[in-house]
Length: 264
Image (tube, rainbow, N blue to C red; front, side, top):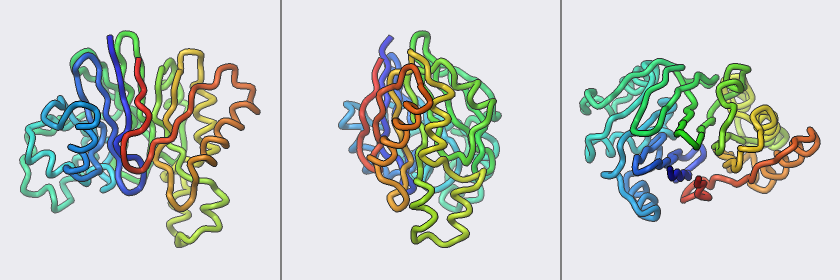
């Protein structure tokens, strides 16, 4: 069974992740323009018409900004929690679109698309019902864990046994503290419903590391409050200091364009 995934964009200006398993092609979030989506999928040898579904993590604009055009052009099933659907319903850009394409799921629910079992996992973020996603094939296990202020024991339990992972490493606390953001925004990012720091990402990764975890994409990096090399070095340093037995390959998911392609 073949599997590959990569990000098309990852950051506060837009998010989209592509996953493919034995011909089943999924998009996790659609926070970039339709033109960019077509461009990046073309680089992967596919296009939006070949997608089987879109999974939404939550309703913030950097995760759904290109969804309305994608829905107009393609009759794709959209999987989202009831809370995310409620949040989308409040946005005027969706008021003239049919709602029949949405498949509402409960946070914590599992469902199947082709050979993949997909599990939505509740996370802590300032959205109505945000989730991470775990995708399980018979011999490959992958997850998207971004946009969360803290990680819980439940989340750690549900992310055991992964082979690949997209994990948020949003900010360096010192850069955030001394940076140009207004104080309320700093408090939001640092809060329990905000975003994971580099150090928090390392703590989560330590808790889910095992010999089968081969590769991790560090994503949703802040352009203002982080540097790619700083995120990589911080996570590596903490894992080494914690005597992690096997450290996976670490890559950075760029704000725009294809990331490293993780493959089975």
